Image (cartoon, rainbow over all chains, first blue to last red; front, top):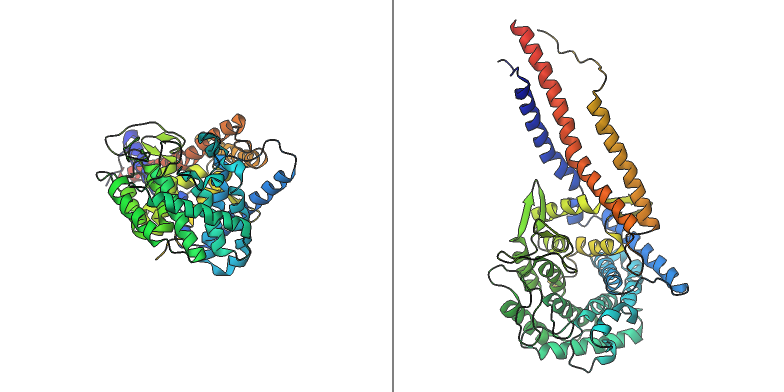
Length: 383
Length: 95
């Protein structure tokens, strides 16, 4: 056989080899840690946990200094909350680490509980603080994020402060009462606006409170689970509607991937079947390219730009939906999807490890905290 | 049977250029790692640090080049070189 002598023939063969090599090698390279994350390998989760424990210690030091440019507000709340949830999930999966991690869970959860973290919600409600208004009918669903973190801390830490535990009991009682009174399974986050994702966090907080204290919340959780299916999930796409009217349940936004993916994670704390149903919806909207995976932000027939919920939307897929989908993928055994999503996360997140600590260069503190919680999701889900 | 002789030859200029891209990427990675540790992407109060964000964009651009373009070009150049070598061997055998 004679080898094609013309330069274009040689180039064509070389190009085919190059494409094949990149198709095989690059996904492997980006996804080489995916199996270990799936299997709960502590050589990966441990160093990321150490990074966040060190972050919380630094944050403590900066709080001891005179107030200047403090880490506070919505992003700080989520950072401390997700740190608490991630560390708690590791403690549940590895009980031998519980004694060491439980105080760290409490430390992060208590910070998420501080008034300065929820200033954005207090302002939205015209100065009405969520904790000071547990007797009102206003939803304040955003406060479920720290309430969920505090619940996990109470579940793990026998030394959790009694004063905050009492406040937590009052908040959970208020959420239970408001959710039972709702015919849509929704309570307001801000005046006139309800987000099914935040309501999933409310349900998660109620459920974890029950596990931590022994209180029976079965009735409200069953009602919430039924109404999620009946009122909040778009039957055509399987995604939840991002924002709805709290009273009438009228859609105020499209069915979207970011809300569904984060909602699936939060729903997992409360109800396995609801979380699984949301996961099924998400993975119908996975886009793949060259071995990499990402989740579409908008259901077919809907269009929109990125916002504070989704992060940037590029080629129809969003950062939040893709990152948050790691949690249900891991928890419900979508192993192939998890690997594809992890490759994308690794490529753009850029994890590095040094000095026994691992962090994602492109994510900052909030990215590290989110990924700790999402990449270790599973142990928090009731059987 | 003619033996396939592999002789050391000076790498082509394109190989040096690819190596330079990889070295540049590693340097930018170190710089970005340092800046995200020392300064952060945003201030504690939430104000973006635009210099670090810009460095991050450059870093991610270089990361994509190093993960996709560089391996592809390395394999392309190696395959082209090997194919040309095999082609010249087969032509000299046939003559």
